[in-house]
Length: 352
Image (cartoon, rainbow, N blue to C red; front, side, top):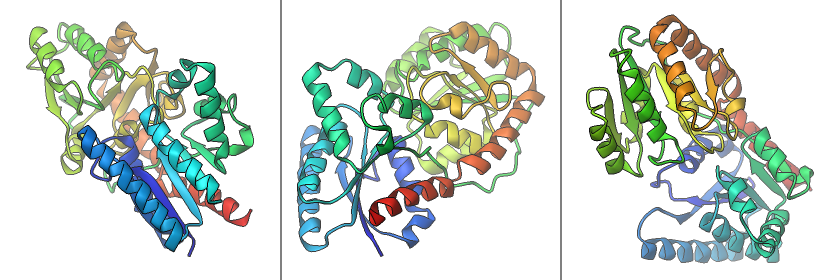
């Protein structure tokens, strides 16, 4: 059985990378490959992060020496995440071990474009050292093929473990869900502006805002706008609690300014919510306008308000969109579809 080392965030960490990793490690890939996970990052104090990185590098060196892997699969975002993975990649290249770099960073475009020429050259060099660079959507493939040869790039959309869920939502009272890191990038303050407008027209809704980040700032903004009767700021919610919110949610709203291929939308689709999101990253490949949701431009609060109002007024439309989402996620975004694409990448490397 081929040995694959995965270098990524700790499974106790939060965010999309960890969700993707958990789904992949629950897929049929575990029957074909001998996986070893080496966590290299967790969102804790600087001392803990440094200690984990040093430990990860030490574990990798031992693994290469005593149990040489056939492939090392690294998951990276931007900034520090990319540079940490670069050190692993440089070491593995020297040892002649093929690497797959899996890019999750929704801000990679601005990360790269805002660099000076020397840093850009280094990023291109590191990307080029990998046998394969996995990106999350066609949008990101178009971006990366301007930096590295197109034949090195493979699109593997995020997948999700399907839930045995039968559509059963209260259509008399709409529950709207936002899931993601609270802050400007995910558009949570735009959502609050829309909510402020909605309460003047419709009172039969409740917005749940779930995630880490600027939790206290968002709560204060809710108080300032006197939206306590319509907005519930939960903070971070764990998997079991998250599934309960998803079961009740009629509408998922994610008005982000940049994204990769958000797991929050896949989770909402899995549970039959209509989706309102923005024309960034891979989202237009997930949402078909007027079929399973609505796509707006980032920062367009008026459009966000209009689409939310439409779905609040038309429960039959949000039910139709929600059921279309359940169908689409089963046809296109089952974790086994993702696993098959990763398997194809691995097999091509093993045969080369």
